[in-house]
Image 1 (spheres, one colour):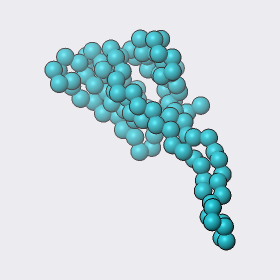
Image 2 (image 1 turned 45 degrees about the vertical axis):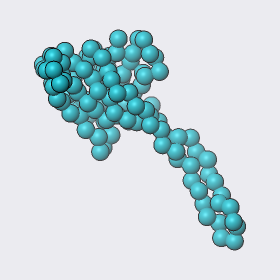
Image 3 (image 1 turned 30 degrees about the horizontal axis):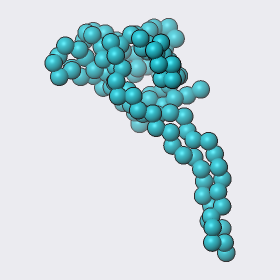
Amino acid sequence: MTTISDGTTTYTPTVVSGYQADQKSRNVLHTVFGVAAQAVTLRASSMRSGQLTAVMPTFASAVLLQTLLTTAAKFIIADSGFSLVGMNFVIPPDGSVSLQPSESYVAWLVAFDYQEVP
């Protein structure tokens, strides 16, 4: 069971699909004049970012989740069956939250970009 929360209000989607976790390299390559090879500054990769889609059972619950995700807050996603998904996240500055019906109109989809934060 997956939950999405702001620490006060919690929603439980029917399912969360499309899990994708990108981590960008933050290594720095330096060109050194007179040396054929580049110097490297090694840095840890960024925290996870990507997009998730929460499948909500009703239009009303989808609107409530969309409203939650568009507030100025840090969110928590947790999954009792797959703990590696769990994280604190925010919607990134260039991210979006969208709402649309499923193909069969049986459920509603809330897709959102995320950036993991400490």
